[in-house]
Length: 445
Ligand SMILES: C[S@@+](CC[C@H](N)C(=O)[O-])C[C@H]1O[C@@H](n2cnc3c(N)ncnc32)[C@H](O)[C@@H]1O
Image (tube, rainbow, N blue to C red):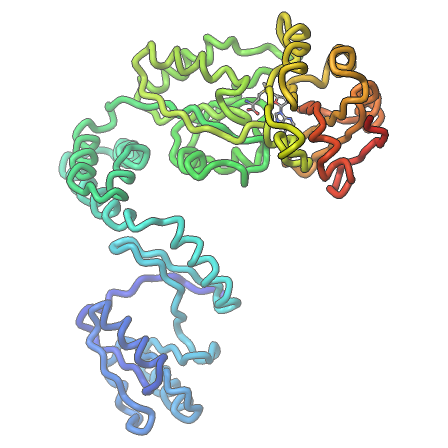
C-alpha cells in the first residue's frame, strides 16, 4: 500500500468523531486544534445519515457494528474516514507528528510499525529543538520580503541557506528572539551578495557516526565542501544534495594541491558569498594543517568557524580498546608524527617523557620507528598498530616494540594506521584479544 501524503485544511469544516473512549477524546481534541468544527457522536447515538456533510470522520467507537455502518455510509458519500485500528476501513491514516508550529513533520510507516514511527518521532523531537518553530516564522517573513523584491529563486535559496548557517538558530535557542529577527532580516537585505563563511570541520576517523552534530548540520547546508582524500563516501553522503564537492586531498604518488592553493580556493569561495566547509580527517588541528588554513583565512578577512573532530590519535587506540591513560599505568600521553625532519629525535624524547606515545603517519617507516623506540625504552615495551580505526575494515595488532613491525607486516596491516606504545597496550582489552579484527602476539615483557 502506498499513501499519498497531504496536510488537510479543516478550519471551520464539519468533522465527526464516533465513540466515547480515550481515542475518541484524543482525536476530537487534535481535530479541534486544527480549527475543525467537531461533532462527537457516541456509539449508541450514531444513526446512519449522521455523517452527512462531514469532510472527515474518525470512527473510534471500537464497535464492529458501528464500524461497518460508518464505513459504508462514508464510502457511499465520498467522505474521508479512518476507522481506528481497522486498516482495511481507512481512507486515510494519521501520521506521527512532530510539532514546531508552523513547522510540522509527519511520519508514517504506512501502518507497518507504529513503534518505528514513534521511535523516529522521538529522534526528530530531539533533533529539531523548539527554536525551529520561530525559525520557520522568521524565514517565512524574509521570504515574503524577498518575493516582494522580485528576487530569483536560486538567489533566495542562498539567502535561506545563509540564515540557516548563521547564528539565528542559536539566538532563538537562547530566547533572543529580537536579535535573531534582526539578523535574519539583515541577511535578507544583504541578499545573495553578502559575505560567505568557511567552517574548518573535523570529520573524525572515518565512521560517519563519529561526526559531531555541528559537523553534520554544516555539511547539510554547505554550498561547497572541500575535503581530504581519506574522507569516506558515507561521510560525504551527509552533504546536502546541492553541495559541490571538491577533493583537495594530498595523496602519495599523485600531484598534491599545494596548501596555498587550497587556502586561496577557500578564500575565493567565501568572498563569492558561499557557505564553505573544509572537511578534514580526524581533528582539523591535529596534524591536519588546519592552523595554516585558519591563519590564511583570518588574514584574508574571511569569517571562520572551527568545529573540532574526534582525532585518530585518540580514536584509533579507543577503537582497539586501548585507554591512552589508565590509573596506575599511564598518566601522560604524547601525540606525534613519524614524518618530517627530526622526527626520530623527537620520538626518542617523547618516548622517554610520556607514559603513552601515539605516533601518526607511522606505517611506511614502522620498522625504523619501532627500532628507534626499542633502543630508547626497551624492546619489550608493549605496542599496537591500528589501521582503519572505526571503519568496517579496522585491523589491529599488538606485540613488543622489537617485534611489532614484523607482526604488522605479517598481518598485512594497511593504512591509515596509528602506532601506540606504552604499558596501556598490555593492560588493554586488545592484549586479551576480546575485540573483533584484532590479533595479539603475546610475550609482552
Ligand atoms: C595527516 S594525519 C591527520 C590526522 C587527523 N587530523 C586526525 O586528527 O586524526 C593522518 C594520520 O592519521 C592517522 N589516521 C587517520 N585516520 C585513521 C584511522 N581511521 N585509523 C588509524 N589511523 C588513522 C594515521 O596515522 C594517518 O597517517
